[in-house]
Image (cartoon, rainbow, N blue to C red):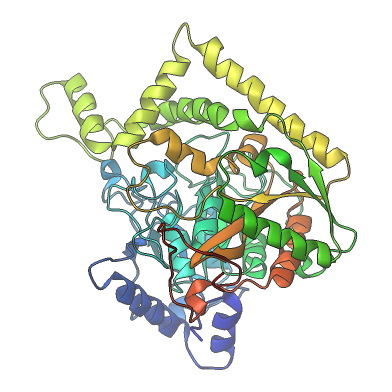
Length: 499
C-alpha cells in the first residue's frame, strides 16, 4: 500500500522505520512526477519542494511529524510562490506563512508543494487556472472540480495524505465529491484566514481534503483556534480529533431537504444517494424529509455577494506595487488598465465586472442589499430545521459527477450550478463536510453533511460513522475497469461495482 494514502499509513511507515520524513517527501515527488508523465499530466501542483530534504529539517514532534502535506496556492507560504493560479501573481513570494501553514509546520508536517486552482479560487472545475487545467485522477478527460481541484486530485492520487484548500461557495466539498475524498469546510471563524488571499471575505474559509474523516479531524484540530491576526477568528474550544470516532448513529436524526432532490440532480447521483440513505437507516439513524425553501435563491444570492466582495478585494492588483506589470505603459491609467487586462483571466474579469455593477449607484439596493436579505433567509431556513430536532442535514454534494473538460466553459451559469448544493453553508457560515458515498461506474459521488455553527465534533462524528457503514472503495483502489454505457455516461454503482 502507498504509505502516503492516509496519515495513519504515513505515520505507521515512519514509526516502523520503513521510511524517514525525507524519504516520504521523495516518495511524494516520485509519485507526482509519475502523474505528470505522458500526454495527459494531472497538473495538480504549481510548485513542489523536491526530494533530498534533510531528515532533521522535518523531524519535529507532533501529530503530523514527518508527514508531507500540500497547500492550495492561494494560501501564503514563505518557501514557495503564492500565485493564486493567476498570471498577475506569477512568481510572487509571500514574506510570511499563513497561520494555518505555520500551525501545520508546528505539528511536524512538511509542506511538499502548492496545488493548482481556479484563478483566485473563482471556478468549479480548475479549468480557469492561468497555468493550465487540472485533470481528474481517475478519468483524465474530466475535471476534478474546483476551485481546490489540485488539492483534491493530489490527495485522491496518493501524492500526499492531506491538503489544505479554501472554500468560498463549495470549493472544498465539490472537488472532494468529484475526486472521491473527504472535504471539510469549517464554521466561518473556526480557522484563521490570515494568509488566505482574499476572494470574498465574508465567505472565505480554509478547509481540508483527505482520504478519511479521521485524517481531516486531526488536521482541523491542528489548524483551528483563535488567531490575533484575524479579527473574524473566534476564541472557542478547538474540536477534538478523537471525537470523530466516539459517536453512534443510533439516535441521530438526519434531515434530507426535498429541494436538494430536484435542482438538476442527476438520476445516477440520486440512486447512489438513496443507496447511502438505506445504509444509514440500517445503521440505526433516523431520516426525515425537511424543507429549505430559500435554496433555489442560493446561487443568485451568492453570485451577487461574492463578486461584489471580489471587485473590492482584487482592486489591489494594479501593477503598481507587486505582481504583474504591463510592458512600457503610456501613463498611469494605461498601466492599470493593461496590467489588469493582461494579468487577469476571463472568469476573474467577469466576476469583477459583475461585482462592480451590483455595487454601483442605482443598483446597490436592488441587487447587493437584496442579496443580503436572501442570505439571511437562507440562514434562517437552516436554523429552523436544526431547531426542529435535526442533528445534521444530509444531501448530495453536487448534482452531477465530474463532467468532461470543456463541457461547461461556454455556459458560465451551468458551471455555477455545480455548486448549487454547497453555497448555502458558506452563505450561512455553518460547517459542512463531503464524504464519498459511492461511484457511478468509475466516477466518485459525494454526500454532504451540514451542522449548526461550531458543531464540527458532531458533524465529523456522524461523517465517520457514515464512512464506516457505507464502506466506500475508491476507484483507484479497485481493479474494476472503467466502463461507460451506450450513451457515454457511467453505469451506476456503489463501492466501485459495475451495475
